[in-house]
Length: 324
Image 1 (spheres, rainbow, N blue to C red):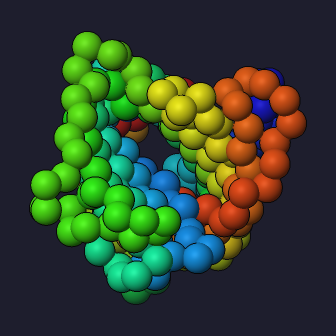
Image 2 (cartoon, rainbow, N blue to C red):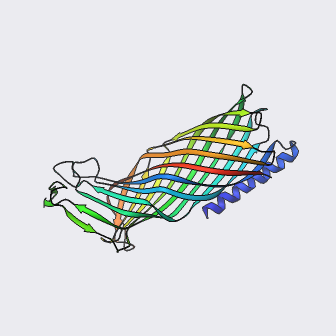
Image 3 (cartoon, helix red, strand yellow):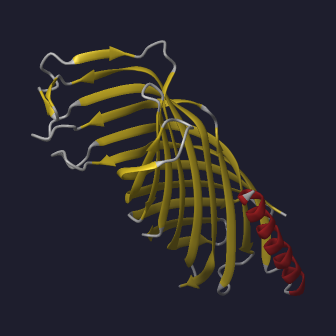
């Protein structure tokens, strides 16, 4: 429903812009850009301690190494950006291809005596869902005949869903309540091979960020741009299901910091067709909030501590631009 609403709003904007184009000698063009590419990195799930020694109680890393995707970018952009300042806008949608995307690693530090590792498990990570929606709008300003400066605001929504399947675990021997032997001292080992899904996790992200870019334009044939965004306006909702213990965790987190440096190279074959290559790194750290738990799908959630989340993905995309 949210996607349909955003798409409808954006179509209205474009229709209005096209109407303005007719009145202003087509200063703007509307482009459809099929895109494909991949992301490489991981999503991070954190549980903070209440009475143990280490800085973290648990840390889970969910690989996206890699996740391939396809999608569409819609752009409203000036026909001649180097003449004077102009408005621009874009809406990008990326849909991931489900499949194995590396491993999931789970580490626990449960000791009340020290900060040593007390549990480590690894599983095949299956990316079941992957969706990115990015909307940006702003103004471009020509500078020194060949440089193009852009200031903009970006609003992004991301949804990931993973399954951890099969795998194995190592547990340090428990010597007493919160007291453990070193994890390499006769640990208990367990295999989950053949069990299929043993854990699942989903993240929904939403953030708004200001950004700036600097580009070099060569006579309208190509444009090379570097960009940067930063923002503390980050929201994240996590849902974690531990199948073997029949426990579900719901985390509501805010804050932290989002950074996104990027690079784009665009080549215009003619006034109708162009091709672009995008590379950017999306990094989020320090998002934190309350965690709630219950048996999977049963009863009301009860508050159970604090949780955190993070993200680090390198994105590479190839786009074909068709100006209508």
